Amino acid sequence: VADVPGDLETSLVRSWAGDGVTTVDGLVQVPLAILAGGTTESYRFELYIHDADGTQLFRDSWVREVSGRAAAYTETDASTMLESFRFGLRPGTYEIEILAYPTDAADLGVRQTLPVTAFAGRPVASDLFLATRVEPLVESSGGSWSLSRGGFGISAAARTVILEDDPELFYYIE
Image (cartoon, rainbow, N blue to C red; front, side, top):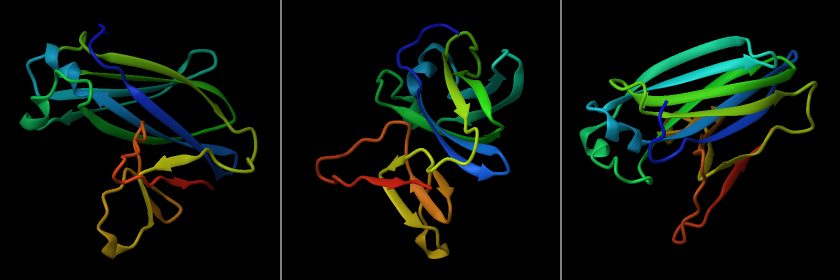
């Protein structure tokens, strides 16, 4: 994977699922600048989980189509797409590997590796979700949520930005 403008910005949040399992929610901002080197308006997102010995335990991937309007902004680092994922881990230390690249140019993309430690037992509290909005999930809310937890919809991103004209910050913790 070659260096391209922009980097992946990732947020991993752990919570206790019970029965010795830690749930990991991931949010990744994928820079549309990765499309500048290809000829397509889509990218492949790959997720790998390795144990402490480097053994691959899990692999998933999907293709995300980008609208022509969004793809036109590949020259700026500000244009990103949000990817989310969730998985469970037993106690231990792991490495998460994430790749994003144009579907027609696998050598032109970005890669990130992150360590994550699953809880050895029930923690006092989960990691903290920071968000631009948290609301109870109800059918009439019609919200577009990045993820949901414990009956709440959470609008979050890998990088939470507070706007001067809308300075609200929400959080969710279990």
